[in-house]
Length: 389
View 1 (cartoon, rainbow, N blue to C red):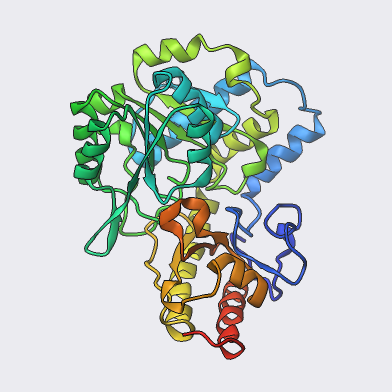
View 2 (cartoon, rainbow, N blue to C red):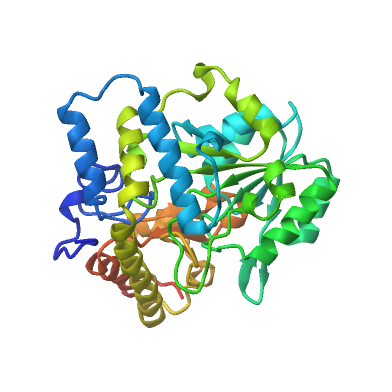
């Protein structure tokens, strides 16, 4: 079974993660990016076998080669991006990879460009690196959030040297088209800039849309980009600490190959086993989960349209994250705080994603239809107890 058919609010597979344990038991959790679906049976079986044989030591060379080969093959098979395993470097997680890429390829003290609203740790990493942050608000083109090339040009003209590009986009759910990515690449190349591409959600793209790896666009894009991927979101294994940097520039690969273990180390041996199994044997399970998520994103639209029609929501093109605009409700406090207190629903606070997130919240719909229905109805029922629009 690929998805949850639970009759209760908390599917049994969720009890060991952060999502359902951070808040009291009466709270319906829709915040942190964990799915309620467990993981693919081949992934679970591979990890259980590794535990049985006591695979708790430092990762060996063979398992690392297995991972880099499986990752390269999956990216080629799924996205048509031919890679050599030698271009793949294991890392503990994508945020760690962003930090390493900035230190390796962004001059000390040079400004970093970040489209906003943005996944909060990306801004945290930039600030922690003592580099100035240039925020570029996403713009709406025909109601669809996009990165405006003119705004990006102004950011590079103001001194920006490196663009942090999240695609598929967390929290807005946009999957950039090839044309949009080419427009971005033209600006980056014009200024001799760099790109660190966070593509962790690339396995989670819905029908009618296609993920195009930014570095696959051209030799020019490949030369100025480090791409970060992981099986953690697509196969729901974020706690196993395993990601990959795809380094498509020969010059950059020499830099990464020379990095000390203290910089790139920390990859979990069980994470390597899980990631390898996901890339090699997890496609069928992932396809089933995507069908469930596709239905859920549409169910959420129907529920909001019926019960909270003034809440603005655009169907995400990828990810299992919904960006909800509650501003028309004129809530007395930030939406996530309000819904947790009044409806016992836990969302991710929009303000954490930057100033443009005020009045918004992020909802994780990777759960059962039952839970999704309950949490929207819990918010709607609050209407009868409060005097707001």
